[in-house]
Image (cartoon, rainbow, N blue to C red; front, side):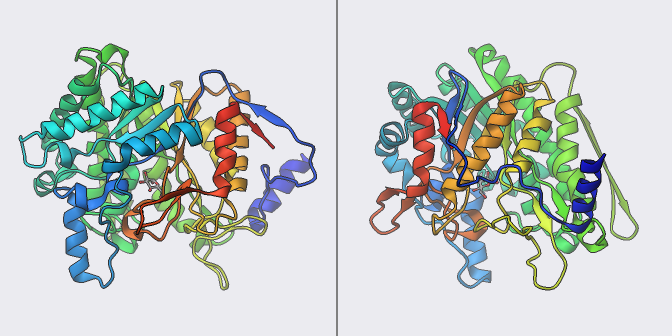
Length: 463
Ligand code: BGC
């Protein structure tokens, strides 16, 4: 009763309760992970190869348009030239990090730059990449849509229109026919909610459509989210019918993100959560559990939204990919950033704090869906590299706790391998285990990343 009371007081006044902070004086312990656990890194083609490679991508066109409107709009260029350097990079992944899985995306605009014209050389590139992964005993996990698609698809209205879904299914089928024999793990779509939020509420991703206050879901955003889930189901169904479809594990990737008030007494701090949590989290998790997407929002003069989609009867999810970084702690008070941290927490270079407690909560929540879970992204932007080691240790401790409690978590992918193009934030964010020298293209393993390599090597984490 007393602890419940204390928790209530802490919640009301906005005091953090830290479960995963590491005490320097503690005795060393070793946390063991299950046999055959997948340890990987995650990346997406556009973020590591840029507009220089993906010329026909909606993002390449978006960058061009933004550069005319916004001074110094960040351009991706050739990013880390991953397309050219993949052989040495994969060798590095094996030899220096020891990973046994790689999550990467196949860029649609490279494969189908013009509607109906498939570039067999580009497809062959990914075949070669998978051959190399096999040689190094690295299990591939492919993402078929990671925020980017061809500009011709965007011009048709992209995922705003359910009639466009068959174009995506056709592309996925093409890729699966080429790679399905050797690739068992498939993510159809990366973060449907974030794609819809950034492109149709905040307007910072293409097509740059904004909502009111950048906070209230718009009709378009909800329609896009609904169509993305619908597209996932259609791709799942189509791929399962192909040769090797039955042996493929097909899921999609959800970013578990919540807006929380700094203090429950401050109504202004509550508002973003009222509007966004149902859209960003609840509706998608409900869909995963039931096959039904339902979203309603009625705010006088602002929004009248009623969206509904039901997946046809039958299975549509073999696993769930979980991306988790943090929560947004909303502080509307003097002396605080909008997205803040409680005393004792530390900020990452992104506008959010480290929050391993939320990672544990997310793992427990998605595990209740009763499908295997892969942590498809987790990592820290830390230019000074003075928090990375601590972050990795605390988040992996949370992961271990969830495993101990019986959650069926099959793998963990660190975001990301090497510093990359962080979309509208350009190259300011340093998520890489490797630091990238943009002039020489040299990759240097960061000191704070060594704990990850050690954990992978021993399949256990030393605290
Ligand atoms: C996305 C990545 C992004 C990362 C870090 C995720 O939302 O999938 O593309 O780089 O977060 O912000």
